[in-house]
Image (cartoon, rainbow, N blue to C red; front, side):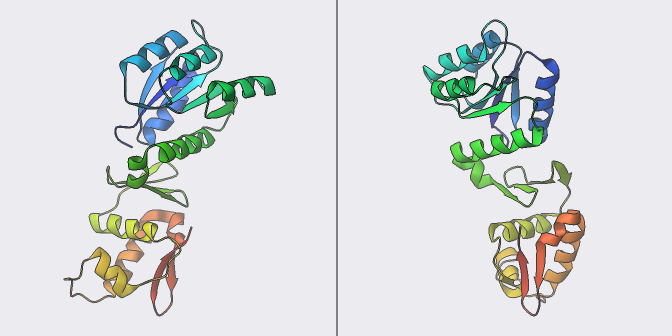
Length: 224
């Protein structure tokens, strides 16, 4: 997600580091603020922020104040973090224009899933450049593949093959069709070369390799 900036504002340094490290691993560019005043300063300085993650209870200016100021001039998506569980606080957050409301303690992977959903919904370019199925994340622009956050080293052709499978999720693909689309029409090799590449790709994907299913006598299907 190169070029996708996320602002994280929380007065707890450990919480900021947890969120920062996870989102950086996912490929985002992360800006950090330790209080509401710094969060607003960064927001006004950095005009291409795609998402803001705000803690409610912060010194200087709390999350509600920051959200009010942001909404005066921007509709950027905002996720609110809070240790409170009162329904009134949650409703106030939505009334002020928050997009998501996450209660502490939370699963960092669950927060990451919400971040991805919002980015893909509000940033069409990012959605087009990123494929996610069955725990596999394929980033076209960065030419990277990750499984549950862990990088997977693929050759150029293996990357193209996985991309073609994921773009046709749930569709049975003949060996000839795969050959024509991944190797191009001017490739005159034996279509069985697909079997060799699929075998190597499955091995590199580990348990996720099982998502590439064999359609006997025909070809393959990627089914998440």
